[in-house]
Structures are given as structure tokens and as C-alpha cells.
Image (cartoon, rainbow, N blue to C red; front, side):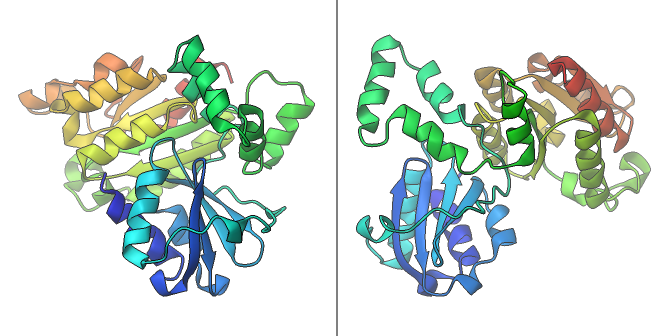
Length: 310
């Protein structure tokens, strides 16, 4: 995924480069001080590719949360686009809002820590703790806590739950956004918006704390979405579209993160062309659902919840 394009989307959402007074990064957060906070479009910001959520800082500040390994490249691109050099000091005295709002994902308190440490040996894990210095692993967890003030998280804490509330990611590949328009005799008349509504309703019914739906016509974006799900989501429901039959790279990403995954197809692949009988992603999924139309997503959501023991 082009980090410059991500930076451009973030800039557009915060009111353009003219509205950026200062910038910096902190862990997985891109910090932006705006000239006029009223120009920030939070809905647009929440839909920017790669953005996991945001946190208000004081009156004019905002912190945009990215997955591990992305924020540095996006920040560098943002500096190039705005010409505004990083300035750490300006953010030191800005309070974190008590009304922190996660938009796309409520990041679980242990997600980043677990993702970092699980990929390193004992010596590497010690280096993580040392490298964080003023922001130790414990402080990092506390920082991530700020962006998950949801009632679900508080309830889980009060009940002494061993794990954060489960969140599910729905990934859709090319042309799924054309539902209702694309070959309705095959894919039905339900729109893409109707499919999204079904996913969110089914997720709530199944007991998930959060359902995020992502769609892209680009293979690399789908791979990035799968990788970014590591340490953040409990499971993935995926309809790779035509990439189902061609993409070993998407299969490799799914195997790499190792999350429970269900494959969904709106049409009945068994009755389609010979080339559609091949599914690479199936090797990474514990279930495949085909031919149920949009309702296939509902079944997948309920089956995922049962698989996770919700």
C-alpha cells in the first residue's frame, strides 16, 4: 500500500495541509496539531486506509492510530506533503481527551505488546522493553487503554475476563462494492450497503464487540488488511472475490497471521465456471459458505462466534 496515498487521505480528512500546524509520531500514533479543529472530518478520517482509530488531544490536537510498522512511513510522507517539520515539544502539554473515540477498531490493550513480543525471542523481547525507555511496555499498554473506553471493555474488566471483547473483521475483494448492480441474476439484488448492514447486525447478534468491514479492488490492500488484523481481531470473514481463484499471496498472508477465518461467496461456486472451482484461500479457512447471497455473511458471523466460544 502506497504510504503517500495514505498520508494524502489523512491530510484531506484533517482539512488539508494548510490546516496542519505541527506534526510528530509517538509509538503507533501520527500526531497532528490543527489550525482549525472544525475542519477535521472524523468520518472521512475513520475510512482512510490503514487507520485503526483516532484520539483527540486537547482542543486542536489529534492522534491517528496505525498498525505497527506503518506510522513512520506515513509520517515521512506527510512531512514531505506539508513541508512542516516534526515538532515533539508542541504535543508535550496537550492532554488526552477523556472522550477518546476509536473509529474503525477498538485496539485491545495487549494487542501491540503481544504482536511485538510474540515475534521475538526472549532476548528480543527484552530489547523491546529497553527500547521503549520512557514509554515502557506497561506504559504502552496504558496508552492503548486510552483508545478503548468502550462499555464492553469496562464490562469485561469488571467481570474479570481473561481476554478483551472479541472483534471481527470482514474483508471483501474486487467488485463486491458493486453488489446490486453487478450481474444481479448471479449475485442478487441486495446492495453493498445492505450487505454491510447485515454484517453489523449479525455481529451484534453473535456477541462481537466490534465489526469492521473493509473492501478493496487491489490485492495488496487485502494483504495489508489481513496483516493489520494480527493482534487486533479475533477472526476474519473473507470474500476475496476473483482473487479467490488466483492469489497465493492472500493465502500466504492468511497463513502468516493464523487467525480463524471463514471464506464466504455470494454465488454458488459449485455451479459456476471451472476456473471458479479453485480456491486458494480455502486452505487457510475452517469453513466455506457459498450460494446464500448476502445472508452467507450472517451465517459466517454466527459460525465464527460459535468457533470462538462467544
